Image (cartoon, rainbow over all chains, first blue to last red; front, side, top):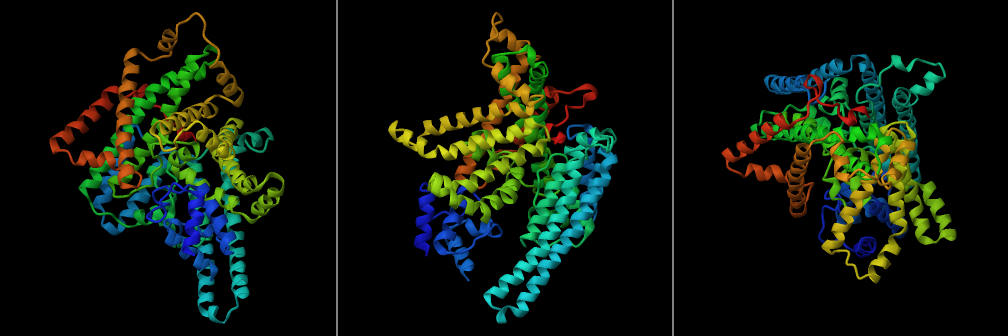
Length: 75
Length: 530
């Protein structure tokens, strides 16, 4: 799953080093437009329903946090 | 009581002294007493509206919090024996109860805001009440939006409700932020207000420095450039060409110096008591595009709109489905962008309306929304053009071009909120392209109310401000975060005598170069009116 998440993220923002960034939201690296695109792709790809309630910085600050979010949404 | 008045300084100083005299556990009581005293002194006739919003939001918040707790307790007990559908149904029932309460609170709070700020003249015209009898409550937009954020966050189960109404009253009416924000979030500010902070010399000096910096921007820069802006905007029929452009450029400086100066004073006063309020500005004129600008300008309002309007609209099932059906007609890209475009317009119309009910504010929102939407739609074209022209997106020249381009987009947009009406804004915009034949440009500019010395002061002060901003920007790039500590950190590392020399020089500069109106009371802050 991690590989697919990385692929999606790189497709949306190729200019970011997602492997090493851990403050994607806190440091304003990802914009709100990116978040909407990322969530849309996650929902389609992993058949989950990530909602507005899940949009907190902790869930999008790093690749691992996003993987964890998808796993929780799949439960 | 204006931030720049001597009365406010005495009031703030007395509050800080009292805050540290009273035992730690009761320090929040000092803040509440000071906040209510501040409101009663500044706007006694409208105090009842703050109380009303406080009580409505507090009670509604308790109800939503109890719904959250009840649902959690039920799930903890029955989760194991429930199917997925049953869990979904239980959650939906709880959400439905909460949603009804959220709707009720919003209707009541925004209803008060709508009647007092937006529909007063229509209601007066209909003979329902005399608008002249009712003043607009001080800071109503700020505390209404802040209360709404509290309710939304409770609905989303992100925070726990306040169970002490006096403490919640402090959160709603904390005096440094009530006039012009920032619009704080409960999880960021409330606990800082409620817990007492022990005296810390560093907090006091850092707070005082921030207040000084705020005064510098407001009194030396904003109120000076305001003279030229008022001359041109108040007598717009008399000016064309360069004079209008200079006025617009100066207004871009004025609004930033005025608003961010006020925020610095508010944040500085809070910091003296160890309270860190959220940032509202992050060097907005260094933005590479308009989206980034709105992420750096009036951040607390932009983020409010992002979290409670943009995301819910852009991620709503309705617009998502509509976007999918549009993919067949307009293609994949437009279909995917459709919910985002709708959300952008909703966001910027709200930002426009936040400033006032007049159409010029809606136009301001539409202008910003349209520039961003056009940027999104034209992105592939721009990428193709850059490839053809061999422009590297990472090159310094391109980035500088982006900053200058964004700055001028912002400058042009400023004409809508500043001009007397939408019609005046359009007429002034086109008058910029009509040359003022006969009178040399320099002569026109020198007749707009400022002397040569004033222009020199503005130039030097803007250079100082720019240099500080560059240091902060560099700090942000190197250390992450918002970079706002960059300059003060640098100052802290200097030897004590030099540090004090800089601070005393700044103090003398403000005292000698500040613009004071009649009775030595500076001009009112622009955002106080919103």
